[in-house]
Structure formats: C-alpha cells, structure tokens
Image 1 (cartoon, rainbow, N blue to C red):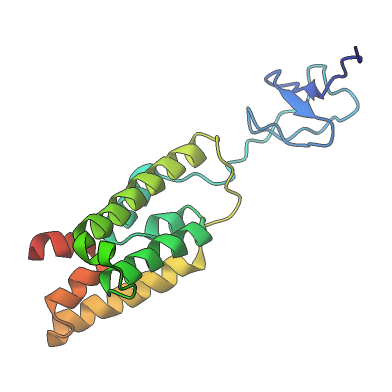
Image 2 (cartoon, rainbow, N blue to C red; image 1 turned 30 degrees about the horizontal axis):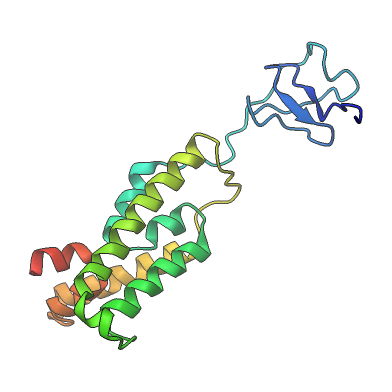
Length: 178
C-alpha cells in the first residue's frame, strides 16, 4: 500500500484542516498570517471576513416577484437567465408544442415554484458557507428591477400594458388575475 500523506495543516484558531496553499480558513473564516508555524496556536488576533452573506428570504421574495431575480441576487447569473428566459418562453408561447399548450399553467407555475425554491436553498447554502459566493449581486438583477419598475410604472400611469400582459411577466399577478 502507499503511504498516507497529510493533505493540509490545522488552523491555529479552530483546528480545521487547511490546504497548504490557502491563507484563509473556510471553517472559522479567519486569515492565517503565520505560515511557518501553521499547526501551533497563533499569538496574532485573527480578522474575520464575511465574504458574501445572502438572506434566503430576500432571495425567495425576489423569485416570488419573477423567476430569475433571486438567482441574480445570489450571483448565479447563468441560472437566473435560465429561469427568466424559461418564463418568457412559456408565458409568451414561443415554443409551440402540443404538450406545452395542454399543460401551460403547470409549466408556468412550475418554473415559478422551482425558481423560488432554488433561490431560497442557494441563499441558505451561501449564508451557511456550504456554497461559496465571492461577488455581489449580478448586474442583471438591477437591470431587470429597473425594467420591471418601468413596466409597472407605465401600467399605473397609462393603464398600458394591460393586466394580462403583466400576468405573463409576474406570476403573482397571474394568480390574482385568474
């Protein structure tokens, strides 16, 4: 049998195993200064860094408004575009298949519910440091929020677009409109 090699060293603050080339403990979120004496207790006071904390409730609320917004909030841009374009394709009937027309409401509300659950769970993983998130919210979130605010403001000011068009963009409006 081969010899067992140590994969990393112990963090001087919490004792977690850290790879040799890392300078940041993923368990206690503290920067490691003394690289020579890695396994010994450190006399230095550690700095605590919060890389990116996400609220699962904010992510779920954003995805409740429209699929994709919660994913953009979690800095998952590609997944956000996937949910957003899936909603657009389904709600505006861009794919004319027999199965989609028969179960239109199932697909429409299914994408919506899966988007809410995914945004909530991803934000929970990020806030509990299971999944890394090193950047802020995606710029697409701000662009879509401005676009949605413009559409809602236009509806409130002029009455156009009508409520059926808004129901295609916002699933909660579709629930209220029937």
